[in-house]
Length: 483
Ligand code: NAD
Figure (cartoon, helix red, strand yellow):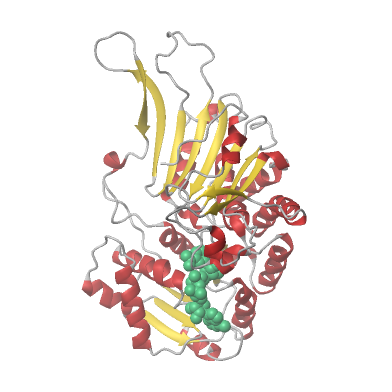
């Protein structure tokens, strides 16, 4: 079955930080793929902006090399690449001064969709927003895309929201969380709200607990200076993990539109229980024979920053009362894997003999490295030999039934950029959501800081600190294997 690709309107997209790591690894290759999928009209303009002086031909070379290097297994069609490069422009603009703004204003067309992707450090978000306004470049229809981190705590997030709101209305601001752009994350909403089957079971009566795990194998090498001021709680939990939790726990919105969905997510964040100190474990990876320690990677021999965190929390409302949500994320773990698992309760009564293999049903949503969704169900082991039960995963990704969309299937960044052009904010965080998320994480972080909390060490390449295992084992449960 071929996928339907609906072209977006002609647009001008300005990438502030157009020479940076994110632009080279994700934004430019992603736009190229959407162009190859005939989703981007060739009359569109993509305008790279940075403070380095570059001739247009130099920028085209940078874009060419980035696309070639970061397009994975996708075969690059030279003709398409040439045509794509023809859409690219480059202007040297100083975000903190007045150089280049006039030229930018002349190049950006006001009669097509125009969007500004702020792929720069957060210290520049406000400066760029104010100059887009001062130089009359942005219009009330323009869109501005804000990268993470959105603030460092509640007060800085409020300040940033305040600055942006001076120049843009909320429906122009697209705060990116690329986890929300993943195909399976959206499929989770489709499965929940497009089937009668799951909704009656989606509550404390049938669900035992939820696990959300984001395990990375990489350490902080290369971005240690940034990460050391942040830590796993700010870098991963406050945004990605909480957003995933919201999608699982939210009430069905009355419509699938941006504000209805975001209203429901906000209610979840506001219903999150405060975390007891003994329901949270902070960890930091230690050196092994083959791997450096966090402190070596961060070049800070006294760092107390966590590279791992595990949390048990609850959503205090009628639907979820008593259902633990276990969250964990860490760096330098044994495997790269992100998964949401919904573990259903045990059968109230078994008619089969004990030990015959029936297990709790588990709905597992795999976000990376391979996206997919499985439902573990108990069936009879085929063949003679009596009633032996086995647990098998029912593949709900249905890749075969739907045909392999591998080539066409956009990655998270591509999908989100196309949503910006379409003006669809459903998969972007609203200002009040981000503030509510900080409101929940701030007291936890402040408590650590005030008592100089020392993270538990775990071996690089392991499954995380022992204390994190104990956190869930105390409840007679086990973390799912990171695999
Ligand atoms: P980077 O340091 O590689 O690039 C920064 C870019 O900003 C460069 O193009 C630089 O020329 C430009 N710049 C810096 N100061 C400027 C100024 N005064 N005027 C104009 N341009 C200026 O950074 P990055 O890794 O590409 O990250 C960009 C943003 O995206 C950051 O907010 C980061 O937190 C976020 N982000 C990055 C990644 C990633 O994988 N790289 C992932 C998630 C979020």
